[in-house]
Length: 248
Image 1 (cartoon, rainbow, N blue to C red):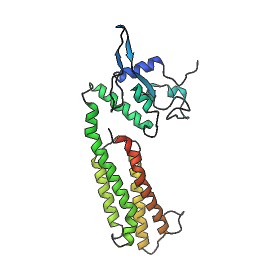
Image 2 (tube, rainbow, N blue to C red; image 1 turned 180 degrees about the vertical axis):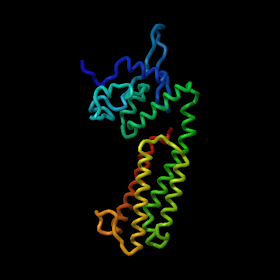
Image 3 (tube, one colour; image 1 turned 60 degrees about the horizontal axis):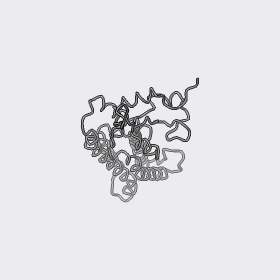
Image 4 (cartoon, rainbow, N blue to C red; image 1 turned 60 degrees about the vertical axis):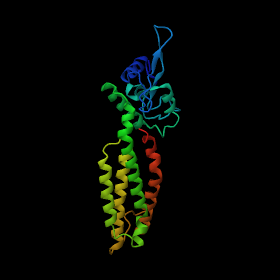
């Protein structure tokens, strides 16, 4: 008998119990079971939602997964009916790693005895740090996207100010610690790599051999212009990346 992508009753029961019959969305935390008019029964208000979709038309469907992997408990998260529908409406807001983090945080909370006002505690601890990092990243990207203009106008000297700002940016971000935001760390690493590229280009233009670092470009100035455009685009996109995480 072949294994389908749907969860078995055993898996559904396990996911519900691991979540203590409470929605894993930290902004919800509604109970997912209630008394029935029949004293021998209960009303179930939750469901085992797939993290990676069960079928090609489902949110977050991964064609590289097997049906066995899709129906495995590790691909499930226990949610109330309302939140289960919500996560499938826009998978860009609820990506795979985000839902996995929800589940991990929720199960850790359950294992810790379900301390009261857990959701509010998350907002007090996480939201200010995330907002601060969002502002730090946007501010630094704006500085990078305008740096070449300031350099050409003599408002900064060489690449010293650029690297000074980079070190300050790294220190500020590191000070906030882990923020549980998928893709943010890799995005920041990419920003830092491109800052060092700009630094080398600026120094080359001041020296006897003003070659571009990337052979795609004819001149170092063209290479810098491309980096400036990249920084500007990242500044526009950072809000979209972080917005889903600023409420928790």
